[in-house]
Image (cartoon, rainbow, N blue to C red; front, side, top):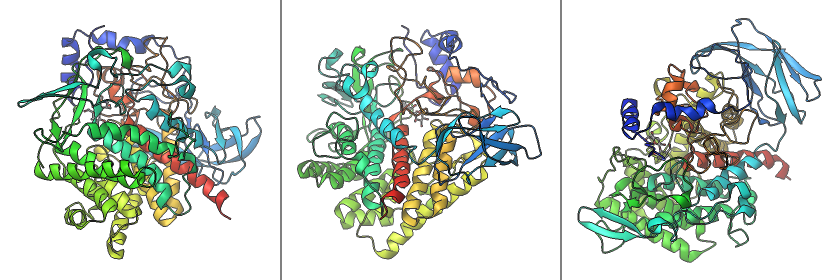
Amino acid sequence: MAEHVERIPRALGAAIATAVAAGLALGALAAPAAGAADGRTAQGAEKPGPKAHTGSPVRVNQVGYPAHGPKKGTVVTGATRPLTWTLKAADGTERAGGVTTPAGVDPSSRQRVQTFDFSKVTDAGEGYTITIGGQKSEPFTIGDHLYGALRDDSLAYFYHNRSGIKIDKDLVGARHARPAGHDKAAAHGGDTDVPFRWHGSDYRRNVSGGWYDAGDQGKYVVNGGISVAQLMSAYERTRTTQGASGDALSDGKLRVPERGNGVPDILDEARWEMDFLMRMQVPQGKPYAGMAFHKMHDKKWTGFPTRPDQDKQPRVLRPPSTAATLNLAAAAAQCARLFQPYDPDYAARCLETARTAWAAAKKHPKMFASDKDSIGGGAYGDRHVGDEFYWAAAELFLTTGEDTYRTAVLRSPLHGDVDALFPRGGALSWSATAGLGALDLATVPSKLDREQRAAVRATVTKAADRYASDSAKSAYGVPYAPKGGKYEWGSNSQVLNNMVVLATADGLTGEPRYRDAVRRGMDYLLGGNPLNQSYVTGYGERDSHRQHHRFWAHQIDAKLPSPARGSLAGGPNSGLEDPVSAKKLKGCAPAMCYTDDIMAFSTNEITINWNAPLAWVSSYLDDVEHMSERRP
Ligand code: 9MR
């Protein structure tokens, strides 16, 4: 198969040129989409800009609504006057009704919409629908146990994507089971013996294990670090939030092979990645010792599909970077405090790694990964590392209480700067990590004095106020107001990361409006959006299930599985940075720049740093729904 040129920085012209140069006709790229009948026909009420099959104009959360929480939806309609809505139970009986509220033209879809609110209904049940003007929504549940399965599935995503270990059918089912990828037996020794050649260095390292990043099988420290940190934080939240419970994340509860070892399963999953991240540290005695290699991946882009164990490409290590080094320092420092009760030796090793990484980054504060280094793997280029310095200092301070790190936190220009910590026009991400530090400073007990802690908490609640107001302004309730209205690559993860901030503010204050905004965010992700699309595989009637992935490539090869349940699609990307999206979605309104096609990688990929906040948020939502039951 022709080599697939996957990730092409920003400029689409370059993307197309490179794809063509690689012998890949654009028509061939688009073909699977055109040929793929999905049996989900569209009734399409609205005038499609690009040919969007958006089904019923009545939009709801296709999973469901908590019995005692907000229940809102949106209808796309040319009408300017209020319309009547009817809530029907599964047997068709009418249970409630009311009128809609005209909401004008929604800028994210450029469609005229109205909203409806049926929060007063509290009767639990499945198969409810809302009908407006003869048009019926997708069915949904009302009840209090909506997100437990999503928590488990979104966490299982990480096991599914482990490198260097067989994926066991007893844990994932026969269809998703596969042999170990990139282990010793693989071509070129897989990831156990990877060359590093750069500026006179010429040696080999064992960088096996960890999680594959995404649809590609590269492993990138900056993305691995934030993802493992968010998994650890999903657990740490349950230790630091009043009334929270970590039971669902504890030993024997999740689908990991280490279950039964006395360590919370979510930490077992985190350790798989931490071990890899620590292998990415340049060893003592070599130039730049203590720094972290920015990334490792295939020498050239592999074709579609490629099961990990069948990858024939040699793997390469790319030069160390300050961003990766600090990312490692932050994650390893958090690892140290969370593993302390379970494995003090391991905790000590994490801490030693973190300290060494911090010192190396201080020594080499300007080693930047280029955003052009995208052959065979993504670039993850980043020239601004003030945020990584802040995050690493925060985690090291929280773990050790030491003055050096405290001073680094308090003297950082980012400290207290809500716009920098929690960008409103976007969200925290692999390139904006400071917020991860601020969230932990606000929640993890530390030697900050009362005033300092109050100040950092105020940045979290202030950011949450903004996201809550963005959600309230949006006809679809989405807590995301990107700069210039443009949805970013991986916009769904930005929505989720803003929800993490909202949820943290809920934990700090108990104010219901924060929790409600998180729930509205879920409504958006699970179908209450301009495309009537649930972006999570296996959830909702109209779910994304053809995401860009080299093994879960059923769209291309029927013998291969579709993505596993609980996999989040990147979501609308105004940039249309791949040929399929560019062709199919030209002229799209921001929140409609999405297509569920395996080759539409800039709108429909899946990756660890998007599933991590999904796991965090679904874990939070399930936990808060059970909090009232646990109260004496
Ligand atoms: O998530 C990344 C996004 O922010 C960038 O704009 C994009 C282009 O550089 O790359 C995304 O990351 C991809 C990475 O480079 C390679 N693995 C898949 C990632 C998700 O698409």
